[in-house]
Image (cartoon, each protein chain N blue to C red):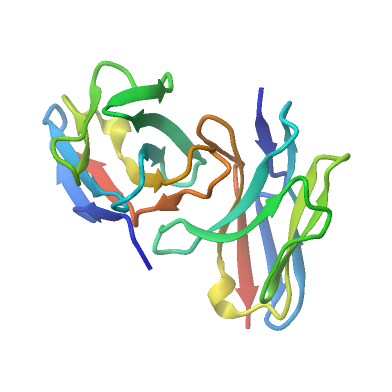
Length: 111
Length: 115
């Protein structure tokens, strides 16, 4: 069974600081991708970043980067220089036959 | 950049009424999905659709739900007799590649309110 666990329901960070959101997962697949999606108050689901499991290098997209530890099945998202517009729900996701989402972490960026 | 388009953005309906939620996936995508998110809860898989038929469905997707691709562009979700607990955001998504490892593109969602 494929599962995704996000153990931090809510987090907050001061503007311009760095925050890390945690995600662990379980899969029997060897080659797979992992995703982080952002859901702002508008409720749209926006792809933030993806990581290929067979790549050792951690993915980076501007201020967003991941810390992928395959052996530990851990996939955390780091947001640097947090901005007010980063306030959103963040979902970790693992594709199987469909996309499995974690329960989400509500991130609030404070001015 | 190509988008998945969902209409309407918000629909209010009386309990027991039928609703149809509409989606226009990205034109060269082959795999289509519906997800549901009850307010404050996680995003839940409803159904996947490929080659004009359902390929997977969850336990949520009971006989009240159906999906259709009536023409080459639209992908619809029908709820036959809505219940209060059907109130949620409904997201359509599509992907182009064979592997689920391709990222899904989501629409903006339809907020369904059953009163």
